[in-house]
Length: 90
Image (cartoon, rainbow, N blue to C red; front, side, top):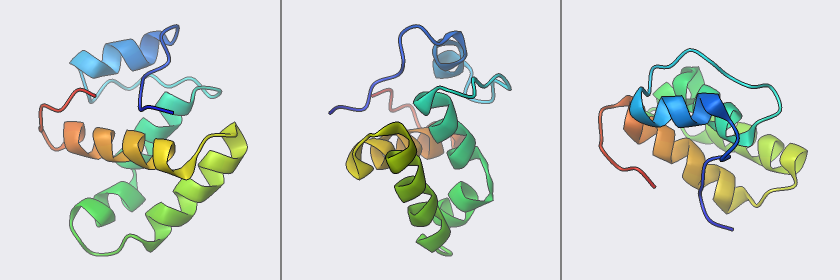
């Protein structure tokens, strides 16, 4: 499984160009990954303070969406990077 956005989710598509986009879809894995990256768990991990709460949330999210842990982890870290102004888009 690769880290791709959900093509039909308008909020994921909008957020690729505008990472601070406030729209989220409840049933979209991409939106949930972005929300996690934008939250306190993502901030703490990005600052190098602790990865434990982020990892726990990733495991729960992967189980909820029947996705691999690696796939969810890639998406969350993609958004952490985008929210910090890095230009990675994939």
